[in-house]
Image 1 (cartoon, one colour):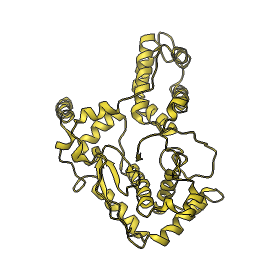
Image 2 (cartoon, one colour):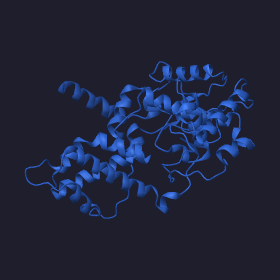
Image 3 (cartoon, one colour):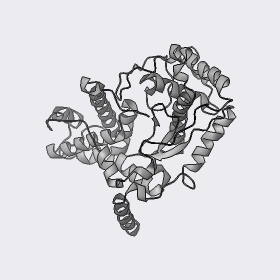
Length: 340
């Protein structure tokens, strides 16, 4: 076991130091190939002739207005996926990757057929011209939107609303008519079915351009630099800011488990739950949880409650902090041009 660990550490250091463009990554013969094939099979089963080109990029997404699907480069190599899991706490499995592919296919079909220019599209989903913001306020009680990927992602923008609706409609064996019966979201799913029957049997008129947003062969920076760029966290001007909250969550005494060890031991599940319910990237949440662990260690705090109740309180606290971070005015800035 130690030999394998040492061997991986050496390989990991080597990979982190290499430029992504030099890794010769490609979708063919990679773990992504059967997933792309499955997406195309699903489109064909729905009678759709368009096959959105899929390319390796720095993240999931469609360049705004361009019918291409960008897939994170690390999914093309199991070793890079392992690094992603270590840094970001989790990596997409086949099931989650298919969810993202279906979502991005929705964007691609919207752009390829310029559906967003149609009056009936705008009447159903809203104006495409609405400012696109990375952080948004969601109504968890709304029945006007489907649920597919992260929490309430369809509420982010009309373009995301369509992509999420398309993804739900496309998912094999998903009984969306029963699932969304009585919801306002049902009319959006019915719209997708109706408009795909109308346009999906013919190829888009406009030629599909080559990807311009960070295709893998243009990533002339190292794997380590990729994660350095992505490394960001919640700005905390005073490290003592959450000391009172930590003392409430961890009220234990000398005989109890150190809170820092508890936080690090449950880091993966805490980060995943907070990221899912808030929609914040796992890298941001991980940095916050690591900060809490370090601070709890400095304060000498210890776990004083049952493990389950402590985890519940910790996730609730973390979710509240991250959601408030997301909803501050400073976070309301318009984003760039990549549609996740």
